[in-house]
Length: 278
Ligand SMILES: NC(=O)c1ccc[n+]([C@@H]2O[C@H](COP(=O)([O-])OP(=O)(O)OC[C@H]3O[C@@H](n4cnc5c(N)ncnc54)[C@H](OP(=O)(O)O)[C@@H]3O)[C@@H](O)[C@H]2O)c1
Image: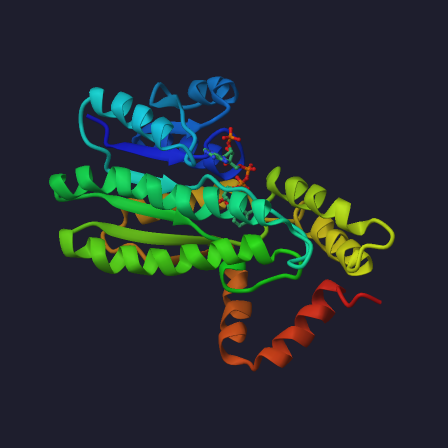
C-alpha cells in the first residue's frame, strides 16, 4: 500500500512538480485544486499514483467533500502539502481591503482550514507530516508585496506553532521557503501591479521599477522540481528540517536581514531592486 499524501494547488507550477516527484518516489498522491480539468494530464504523469481531486481551500464544504473521497479510499493521509497560494500585489495604501482579505483567505486561512481538517486523522494514526509552502517573502518584504509578504509571515509563525504542538503527538512539520521559482505565479504578480502604474497614481514610478525587477527575476528563478525535492526530503527524512530554503543562495540574504539594522537592509534592497521611485 502506497502512503497517501494530499498536495493542494496541484493544477500548476510547484504543486504540479511536487505531485509528480512524490508519485515517482512511490507515494499515492491526491492532487487538489479548483481547476480539475488542468490536472487530467498530471494524472498521466504519475505512473498511476496521482488522482486529481476538486478542492478549494477557502471553502470548508469543498475541503470536507475532498477528504470524504480520500478517506473512502482507505488509509489515513500520511502527508499534507499546503501549497495552494495566490499573490495580491500593489501598494499597501492603495490595495482595497477585499483584496487583502482574498490574500489571507487562501494563503493563511485556507492553509489553517486544511491542516485542521487533516491533522485529527494523522494524530489518531500516530504519524504524519505537514509541509507548508512559505516564501522568502515570509522574512524579506519587497515593496508592493506587503499583502502577500504579510500572509507568508503569518505562515512562518503558524508553522512554528504547528511544529511545536503537533510534535506532542509524533507529527512532523516543515516550512519550505522558495525564492524566485519559474512558474506562472510571476505573471500573476506582475499583472497585479499594472493598474497602480497609471499616470497620477501615487507610487506609479516605483511600481514600474518593481515590475521590471520582477520581470527579470522570475524567468531566471529556480525550477519547481527543486522545491519538489525539498518537499520530498521533508516527507521522507528521519529528521526533517524545520525550514528548507530553495534555492540555498537565499540563506545569506535571510541571515543578513536578521542581523543587519533595518535602515541598511532597506538601502541594500533599494539598490538591488532599483526601486527608488526616481
Ligand atoms: N513561484 C514563485 O516564485 C514562488 C516563490 C515563493 C513561494 N511560492 C509559493 O508557492 C506556492 C505555489 O506557487 P506557484 O508558483 O506554483 O504558483 P501557481 O503556478 O500560480 O500555482 C498556484 C496553485 O494554487 C492553486 N490555488 C489557488 N487558489 C486556490 C484555492 N482557493 N484552492 C485550491 N487551490 C488554489 C492554483 O490552482 P487552481 O487555480 O486550479 O485552484 C494553482 O494550482 C504558493 O503558495 C506560492 O505563494 C511561489
